[in-house]
Image (cartoon, rainbow, N blue to C red; front, top):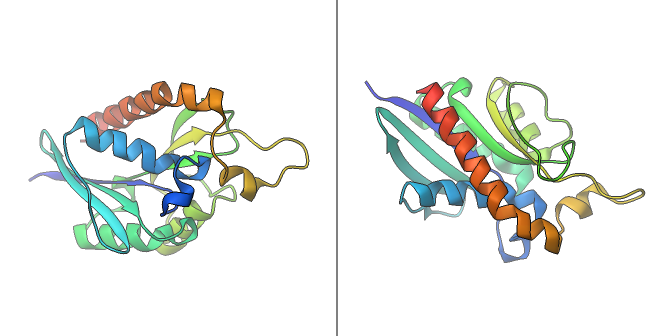
Length: 179
């Protein structure tokens, strides 16, 4: 019997949010999808790709509702696939980590991240895996919402391809150790 995993990359839909800190989860999951030569198919609520790695079936999703509604697509795919939250990896931006810091984590709270908050609320569980991509914090007096919805700086954009590749490698390692 094949094992199933669900990987959700978080972001906001629409061209106006492309390249923003808050949509880095979309960038990383797109890069992961490219490494396995798969494509996303979309409906109004979610983009989805199915891939196989050895004996593991992996469902990749990008919720196409706004960040604070990410739990809808995650819950739908958890239920449809008969998965437990422990078989879920969520890729998201993290203001509590300096830019360029990438960490894997299992369980925990939402730390004010609206996408994680909605996923935790919908699943009724905090026990899922996360890839936290550090985007840093705004300067003194800066608004967090405006900051995460802003685009990366020129120097950050130059570093992002390497950081995205590092993120994809961490995800592939997670798949290998979870399978």
